[in-house]
Amino acid sequence: MPTPKALPTSTNSPSRGLFGHPAVGVVAASILFGTSGTARSFAPDSATSLSVAGVRLMIGAVPLLIVGFVTERVNRPRLRSEAVAAGVAMLLFQVCFFSAMENSGVAVGTMLTIGSGPIIAAVIDAFTGHRPSSRVVGTLSVALVGLAMLVLGSPPDGDSRFSVVGVLFGIGAGASYAIYTHLCKRLLDRGWSGTWTMAWTFAVSAACAVVLVVPSSLTWLSTPSGWLTIIYLGLATISVAYLLFAQSLSRLTGSMVVTLTLVEPVTATTLGAVILNENIRIVSWIGAAIVLAALIIVGTSSDENVPLT
Image (cartoon, rainbow, N blue to C red; front, side):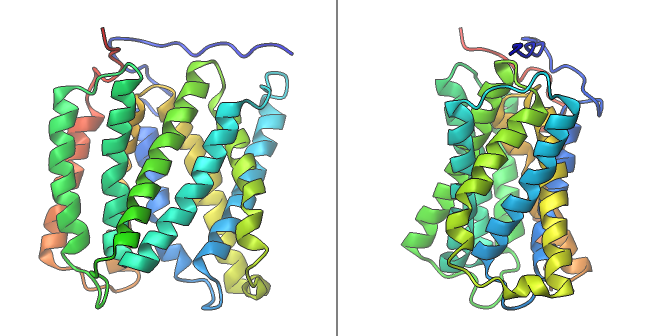
């Protein structure tokens, strides 16, 4: 079987991809990620979070595999241990994220997950030979302050409780996502295409998701709102979003990619206010502006692929 050609790398600046600057792909993906909560709200009340997560993974994996076989059949790589581990990490992310929200509430659970992810990713990058620039470290710190204002500025009633278990699940979700990103980056650096990296990892996640789906009631899938919701979540927030995500990941460091995903809670907050009529206080909007400003600075950085010497 032919070996896929390695992607070009640069130690000076990220290469230009399909969308111009490589940060554009991950920002677009994160905007789609940010629509998940609003879309999820249209599912029937009988749809549990874990059953939605499991079916979502299964539906999202199918188009990725189809695209891989249709467009890159000849260069299909063999399944590697990193892909299996990445798939398991994605499943753990789903479980930990929803468990964090159930134990600590949506606001605190989201902040723990999305706030810890970039920090853990930066630590992984440092240990694996990539040093985040001082510019990125500084703007990340500012972004995390803005994130705290965004998420905690307008918590719904009963959504700001403290739970040790919730904290552990939130950090576990952030760690799982950072590990997933790092493992996918390793596969891309070894010559895997973005399509097959996403296809194989989500195929593994979909197979593992059986443990979430089998014990759950799936009667909600017999309703139009259930089908429409899960099709959108699978296709838009998994298939399309992660193909965009891979385009950026192949050209940026893992820590920078995970940092750019902080645009997700900004999207979620905006949609919550506009579509779901949630009461968002001014402090949250200020926090969103801080996060966006920090991400613009990070996204325009040109010295992210710097190996440690």
